[in-house]
Length: 316
Image 1 (cartoon, rainbow, N blue to C red):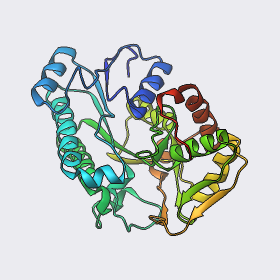
Image 2: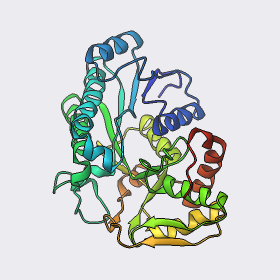
Image 3: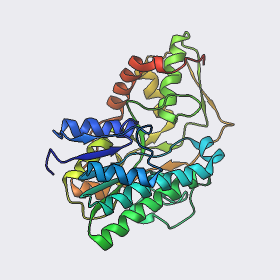
């Protein structure tokens, strides 16, 4: 890939998109373009087509999506389905029509059946029922995966789908009502430390196992997929290792310096016992994650400390 090739990063202001932008710049790419949602409404087909005709990107990376937690998915199923379909369909179809050389579609491990065997393999797609709480988002992402697969099969284009595991890192969401488990824990332990090392209350038993990937590692995987001819259309992206939520809590407690107690509310649900990705296909292609969980959380905590004024402090 020519370092001067024009690369459009859709969703470049988000956690994933901004990480991809940094990774591309770090690899010497000098012709990156991005548009905010105010500048370009990706739900509008005509606007997307006009943008592509004007800018003529050689590579498109789709890191744009309507995202949210369980509550948001459950309360607003229609926009989570329809808006994600609109965004990705406009980007995928216009990329095909405008002869884009490479397209990278980013999704989520939620595309796999809720009761699939562990670790999750790419071939498990569409072999069982989805998790009901986020099925609307998952169905949209599955459609994107299949659209890229169809283009690859019929038109022999370099369209590829990357499905990351649980992500964390700079520009994550630390809002306690809507954030995911790792950033929520990081903020809880930090604020409990400031409040005199008060106890930190966490949901469940702490026994479920989860896998976490630093967003900069995902960004490296995206650059890798741009620079190499991948043999298949769908790849899991993760570390291939997991840990108990209880161990994650103790690690974050150590990193933040909180010296109080941890209280587990066993009356709250644990969720899925385990959710681990099989990442052997990406390893076979030549890519693997490099940021350890401890180092990744340490750097994320440093970022949080510098940017926490963006979040309203609450007493734990």
